[in-house]
Image 1 (cartoon, chains in turn blue, orange):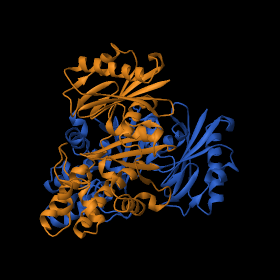
Image 2 (cartoon, chains in turn orange, red; image 1 turned 180 degrees about the horizontal axis):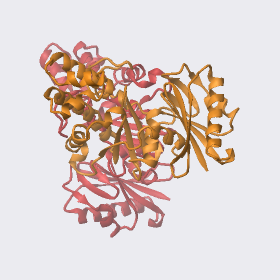
Image 3 (cartoon, chains in turn yellow, cyan; image 1 turned 90 degrees about the horizontal axis):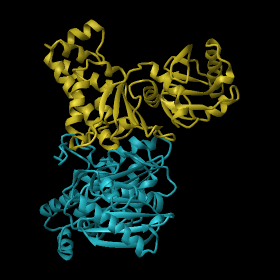
Image 4 (cartoon, chains in turn orange, cyan; image 1 turned 90 degrees about the vertical axis):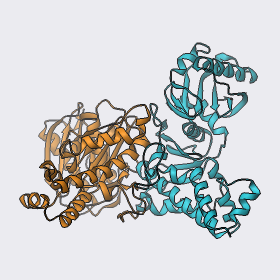
Length: 312
Length: 312
């Protein structure tokens, strides 16, 4: 059998035909043009059929379709999405009118976790988490081989690490994602630049055309002290939430994904791993959780969406 | 079949014979006299046989023995205990020399969760947590019908809620249990008493012979403003960690156990539930996690230990 995974991006729908071993054998991409739920379901069904045909696989060989979406989903239903005005839509029901297969929905972090679990760095683990460091902090949890939260995905980015801290959009104050997302890192970087006109951060930002999640790591790698302090602060906040997540769940492995995870290992992964070894409960004996970089990059979303049916 | 659950307390070993429906049909209690792991394993096996005999059940009808212990366990092995000098002991192996049955080990909070899941307030849920408010903050997690953390139990009491806050024994600063345990509540109460000699807290403490986890709730119930402020502060910290736990796992229900959970509903459970409804991610739509009081009291430990074999 084959599975189809669809990644719903900001401007595109990208579908992958995935085999039983978790490899992408064909892809097909179309622009995202949203009218209404009915039209969207029809477009998705058409895209699924198109990528099957392109891969030379008969529709009878497609077991199911999975879709990764930025937002909140519940079984085959969309609760709400951040980039498409869709709320409380029974998407699977609409989809089946055009292609009678199960449609599994997951959020982006869930799909990244499922992808890495079957085809990436999480292979062979039992309890595994992916934490994505992007606009926010996302989290997908595989516990005992199952995706945690069919009815409601993990929102680990909204664990409070600073009581009474920065106001978060979610309503709480001091959420982890206010301190450990790429957005937060950019904020720390801008603040450091304003306070340190002599810092090498300015040259790096100018060269790259903007301040982004890489600016501080790039300047720190070149030895800039201000940038190094920004990276250390960021790592400390990142590890704070990671250690809480690890103490609650004691997983074998946490993989970091998203843009920031690409930072130089000695400035991000290594110091984070050191703080986990020193501060998580594992330091009192027992298994120490490994912190590694996610492996699959953008493919994780498609592979994970395609394999959602295996972890429900 | 029958199961035997043994609760390892500070001064006693209490064994219960439990039937398939999760009811305790007989109990037997002996003083805890610890010499070494071999002697302890023999005593435990003898106790299991004694409670079976007392209940009129043949040993052939005992499927397994489970044991709840204050500390860290891993399968049939003890990592370390807080009240008995036992470290890295293959207890099941020693036990089987005297009674050839599986021996399942769990920590106290795990057993409370398993007991409440099968026979108490958690019946019928899929994702369920028990949070115990005692000397520390303990946590047992049932996710998808399985106890989370066979190799390493949840240590949710050691999620940081106050970055850089109170020093915890675990090495971190600002752990939830420094703010939400009975110990923390007693600390808040003492501080309020020192600052408010006019408060009714003094009379309540004197009447009961000591400041304990009930002092503030009792005085607050009688209308004392200082005590009310202590209760509100405690509830706010308790809800802070609960909301983080809930956002990470999105369970259907969290049950509060331990001495503090017995506080008047309108001063503890009700305001906590309100903060969960207001601040957890569920407030953005989807399932709201219920916060309730654990039902089984001390029996939860025995029933949970006895049924550990069902959730591994």
